[in-house]
Structure formats: C-alpha cells, structure tokens
Image 1 (cartoon, one colour):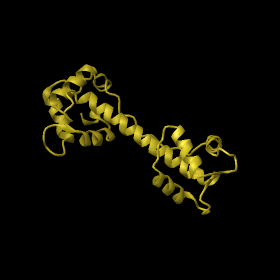
Image 2: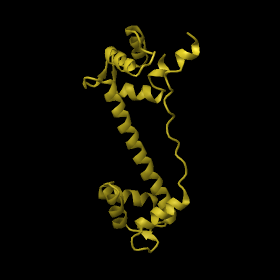
Image 3: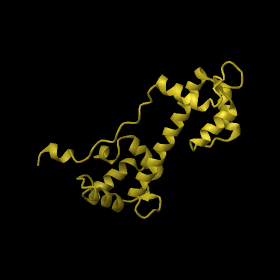
Image 4: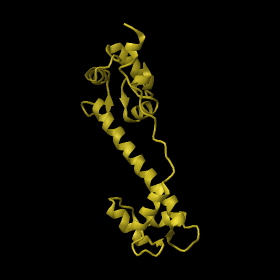
Length: 174
C-alpha cells in the first residue's frame, strides 16, 4: 500500500471562515431596508424591528449599547457610515453562533450515547462508519484521544473536542 493511499481518505478540516469586508452595495441595500422611513438614519426602533423580522432578537439594553458604541456623531441614531460597523458586528456574531451550532452537531455524531463524552469505542465506531483508516484499532483511537485529553479521563469532552477541531480534527492527530 502506498503512502498516498493511506493518507488520502481523511480530508483536512476546513480553515476557519475569513471575514471579508462588507460589499458596499449590499451594505447600502441592507441599510435602506432598516431605514424604514428613508430619512438616512436608523432609529433604535427601526433597528429593533428590522432585526426581529430577521429572527434576531436583541434585548433593548444590548441594542442601546450597540448603538452607543457606534454612534460616532452622538445623534442617537445610526447613519450609513456607522451602520457598516454595526452590520459587521451583527454578521460576525451570527457566524460565531452558526459555528458553535455546527460544532455541537459534530460532537453529537461522535458522542453516540449522549453522555457528553467521546469514548474510544465511540470514536472507533464513527471513524469506521466513515470508512477512514485512522482509528481502525482500539490502540489507534486511544492514542488519538490521549493527544487531546486535557483532563486525563481517557475520553474527549466537548471543550476538548472543540479545541481539537480547531486544530484540524481527528485526522490531524494521526
């Protein structure tokens, strides 16, 4: 068996998303949606209503804090220039929430009995079901777990799993 064949089944984990600058045309379009009366500034009520329509519920105090943090001219509203910073903040927080949800779902796949830990047997079972060469033996799985098992209990908890996934996943451990 060649080295190439044994290393090809495990795809590397995708890199974390790169935050790109907001497209000015998209920003203007979204700003106009939020600026319901078209006066060139977004009030706290307009912002709250628009976010709620998008399924994003922000407590009133947090909303006021967001506005205060970006309201550089001190008028109590958000103009187009200020909106760029706010929009980027909202999108970053939304992306972070999506990443956390994805991480929890991935953990659930490995934590087959739902007890909050990935055992050697669970790891071996999942890797085998994925058709991966890594983790074919119990010893392989023990070694993989040992590399990320910070608390030394012989299992991978959610915190250890997140750290491992950010470092390239189980494939990076072999």
